[in-house]
Length: 294
Ligand code: 5RP
Image (cartoon, rainbow, N blue to C red; front, side, top):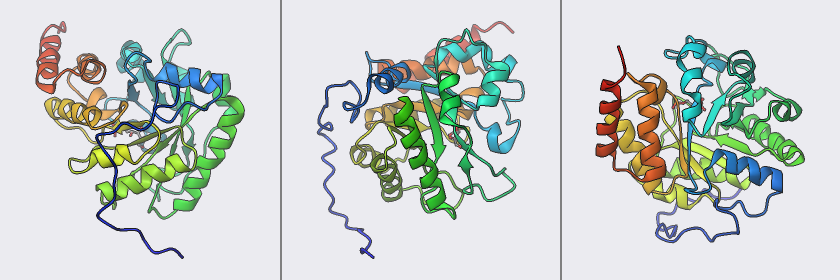
């Protein structure tokens, strides 16, 4: 077995962008037309970034706060996101087929919050993902988790099926209660996803070393939101993530649990696509929140 590579003198050249490959997205220049087109539906070609709204929490924790009535709280703001990440059940039951934004469908699942979460299986056939016109499928990868290998196999099987249908795979990393979310762990988890074929990787922001994580990953990284924090802090985190190499965000609770999800997603959009500093984006959020009729 190879020795663990824990050296501290690794060279990530954080100030040099990963060599471009003929497509606006990092590491994405060698895909078929359909897969490239789907990626261009998720990521705006003019900025190379995305604002994804994650509302798939119910697949393991039931009616999450803010998502009790997706028809009332999310459907009206769904078009503000570049992409909506959700389960096929919520999509078919609640999101009108007139919706024009990209759909990223949850493709793994099984255990509820009451059980070992890493024991997931593939939860959708790629044929059905294609039937609902998914722009990507999302799969949880539990590096260091009890069912690490099984979750990685879920991802690699989806990657194989995704290449057959031209549907990219979003590998979601660093989920788990006992994990130390530092640059070494996130660098390991994101790189494993990319090396094994994920076209996009989702991971958490960390204050120390996030640029190393994005630099060491050859495909786009989108930042996960995590538990609800103050709107000002969530905007700051999104700003730093994109400044440090993320190709956008995939946020849930920090949008749909905010006082005004619509104003929050708008403000996040200005940070991600416009590079607006977080203080200005927060002012924008407050202004928009004040102008929402009671
Ligand atoms: C983790 C997921 C969820 O979709 C997402 O990350 C949760 O979003 P947030 O943490 O921003 O509320 O992939 O299971």
